[in-house]
Length: 226
Image 1 (tube, rainbow, N blue to C red):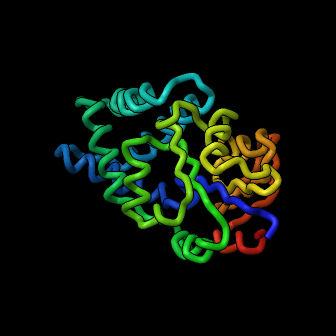
Image 2 (cartoon, helix red, strand yellow):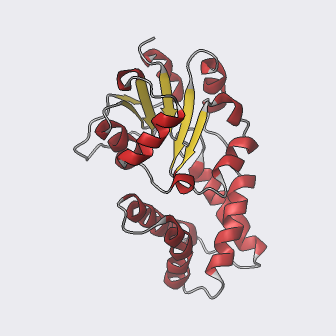
């Protein structure tokens, strides 16, 4: 087996975050007795994704991200309300509505005990460990690294420094990063000297200068690389 350690991203790599976010968003509107219009979710997602890009680029910190993404959405959608309370309810709903991508749990079962694995995620500390517990994934991982807990995010080298400390410093040539984000997972792994596997189920075009070592469209294809 060429790799002795696997580093998995969480959202949209193992978690079906797109569906989870959609369900949690609708549930939050319901919880506040608000009417969700058809365009609201897509409007929010565009704002949230820009906030996360700003966070990865160190333009904002994670506390600011928590605060501004719903403030900006409320402003754009002309909604009156407490954006911070809405955000807190949304985070709780993300836990309760969490689901896995097809084949994710089965893949973890198959790899567990054969090769050590860790989670590396830029998610928020309020929810990531709870979601891993909720979906039954926690026991499969030797380490769980959450950016919000350590104060640094992918793709930056200190995130991977911390990760390697947690997994007892394996050889970089024996570690594979698996994730859906070219800008955080693939760029971060590549810049740190690690092989990378881009999980690209939607067949998106790679318009970045970074080239992953591998590309897969289904999680089960990972077996062919190990």
